[in-house]
Length: 295
Image (cartoon, rainbow, N blue to C red):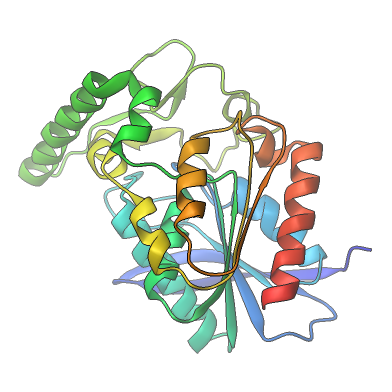
């Protein structure tokens, strides 16, 4: 049975910039834990993060979502810069806010898709995080990511474009952008019929500006969350599909976790985990059970 919950707009600081988020609190709240929920790359909180945060709140968990710096309603420049290091710092700031301002005694971390890696890196060094869950985690190194970007040559081409765009930004303050999603432009960050991001009833929402800074390529492609796995000793739950993104990365990450862990494989594509009933039902049930047992 789902529970009623209230939603409150919150604001907190991350390295001098104000982040804007939502706190979802069950009406019959009797826990001192908070789950920080984050979504896929390029996205705003109203997409996957809010979707799962509200479902978990209805299951009795207090959840916190927010826009990363440079995205959505949060401050920060440059805008739409997919920089893993900056996003990891924002997650750390969200945990600080939950502990110091909201009084959380235990923190759960939930990442969907790309932010699973960001949550993992923070959890590896942030002792305040008690439990970690990942839904359809995109976990890569440069070898694993190459097939998704036209091989090693495609990766190098994007890194060179990223460096040129970053140099231009440093020299002029101007930011070069590419489309986040396109079915006609091969230069887009996501090129193809990725229906979640093309459907206004799903992920193509007004809050999302559908662009990404070109200088995102180098920090994104060279990011390697797999190396954080051996340092994560808290309980970890993962749910993924062999037909979703970078399944080998999820398995490698799981294999190197030294603490309590579970990896569940089900059917479905990457985008199915964002809002489709079958995959969401499995992900919600198993993730909620994980947090009930570990927070």
